Amino acid sequence: MKYIKAKFLIPLILIAGIVIYFGFFQDEEEEYITEVAAIGNVEQIVSVNGAVKSPSIIELRFQQSGKIEDIYFDIGDNIFEGDKIAALEAKLLEIDVERAKAGLAIVEAELNLQYAGPSNEEIRVSNAQIQEALINLKNAEEKYSDTLLSNTEKLKKAELELSNAEIALDKAEDDYEAYLASGVNTEEIAQTDLESAYDDSEAVVNDSIDTIKDSISAADSVLAIDDTSADDEFQDFKGVKAVTELNKAKVDYKQTKEELKNLEDYYDLVISTWTNDEVEQLLDIAKKSLTQTRDLLANTYAVLEGTLTDYNFTKADLDALKSSISTEQNYVTDNLSAVENLIQTILGYKLGITSAELSSGINIVSAEAA
Image 1 (cartoon, rainbow, N blue to C red):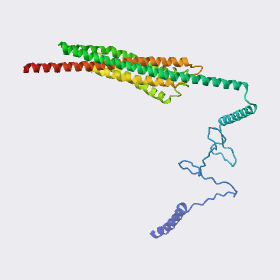
Image 2: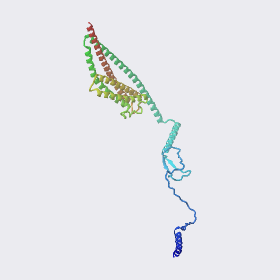
Image 3: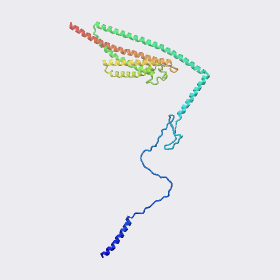
Image 4: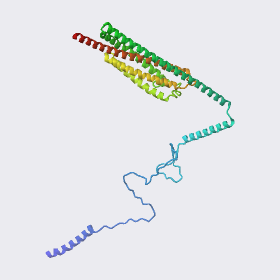
């Protein structure tokens, strides 16, 4: 019985194995795709990151400099030999051509005039130029004479001021000797006079400030630094024969304004205290400022001496400006003399006090010795 079961079981196992083999392990049948052969393009897309750069760059240059007016190609266009790539703006070149044509026409016209001889109008203009030259020569001679006279007058004035100063010095020395001879307390007198001199300094400094301001204004009417329209009538003729003096005057103008500001600032600072030392310092600043103003006016006058005239700016106009500057020069000279005299007066009174103190000390020593 067992034998029969085994006999039937073995074939069944073999059949099951065959079924499993063909059902799970046998390869699938391969499929093939076919296409008719033909000529075509093979496309392949490559995806990368980076900048696109041409393998070669050609730098283009125009024969003339200028502004680009038109560009005839866009980026990526094909360009062939002989193609016009861009064009420059031709307006300026056209103007140059027209100027050249006009210049040629003028030269041709002048040449024709040379062949034809001078016209009546040209003769009239030439005569007018000769007359103008004669007038300029006469004006130059008059200026020369005025300069000589002006220098002579200045020399006489300086000599007179020197003489007055010597007379004042002699009188001060005589008064001092008289004080000593009379037995008066010269120390008290000198001290009183010294205080009076310090008090007088305020008025002298105020006058100096006003004079410097007026001088700056007069100089600006010629130099036209702050008032830029002051020289409209003679700007082209101003200082044409005195260029160096004109440059100096412009520098002096700036320095004079700075000196005036220093003087005014220090005056405002010390006016409430007004000590002797402050007054002496103020007088020194005033002297420096007036000296700078004197240089400004001298160079400004020299500029006018080197200024030409014409029908818009006549000799009378020029003489009016020169007179204005000359007047301010006189004021500055007077103020400068007043300041210098006051400085010398204060110094003299201080020396007088010192001498009186020494004299008193000597008398005391002499009395004690007796």
